[in-house]
Amino acid sequence: MLKKVILPERQLEEDIDLAERPDINIASAWENYWSKTYNLSNPILWDSNAEKAAALDLPRFKDLMSPQLPLIDMACGNGTQTRFLADHFPRLIGVDVAQSAVEMAQKHNSAPNIEYRTLDALKPEQATALHVEIGDANIYMRTGFHHISPEHRDRFAQSLKILLGKTGILYLIELGAGATDYLNSLIELYGEPPRELALVIEHGIRPGDITEEKIKDFFPDCEILDSGEDFLYSDADLQLLEGGFKIPTFYAVIKHK
Ligand SMILES: C[S@@+](CC[C@H](N)C(=O)[O-])C[C@H]1O[C@@H](n2cnc3c(N)ncnc32)[C@H](O)[C@@H]1O
Picture (cartoon, rainbow, N blue to C red):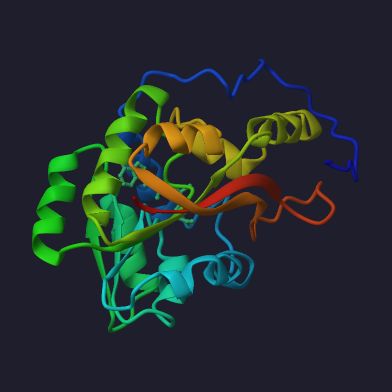
């Protein structure tokens, strides 16, 4: 539950329905988001110290993933979580559709065992090329999937399956049931989208929610080793919120049957 600390004085100028998805080119939208973020040092809604993010995820998958395989951080953004994971796995490959995100990650979150690359998961041929180069890989994905339009998610899932091959393990943590309601109540609380959220939705990017049923549909030939509900925390300074940003998530550990 969100708790109001100060009453907002501003009123919504127009209703914003986060469930409505504008028709956008997702790759350009994210590139525009990240180039503005990089150039203007804008705050990032989901960015969090790894202690409140990948470090909480790690015990759910570390022992299941072979360290012989590279670990891909799919949709790695600015690489905050990639950098943490590189302390726990021998080889990390952070990939993102946005060149500006990759540049930011290289600048702020590099390590000798991390390689950052651009890759568009909506183009499975790019996943095939990477798989030919590196073989099967494990994958970590933190909120890389939920914002993809439902009609394109199959293609994104296909890329993940290509990269996993027969032996890789996928850990995903995505916005879950109730996430869009949480963001809508945040807009109501503030009287408008808080800046961190506005900076994302101004590009037409919209949140989605991922559930166990949807995961079973996208990965019919895979086995779910573990799954559950949790929250995603953020370092974003949302001052009206007691306890900070805390949005519902769904996580799962998946492998080929
Ligand atoms: C909510 S951010 C999460 C970033 C990072 N995983 C984290 O937790 O900080 C979603 C990321 O997905 C990336 N992305 C969007 N569409 C993609 C695609 N088709 N292929 C690869 N990455 C994509 C965006 O550029 C963005 O960095």
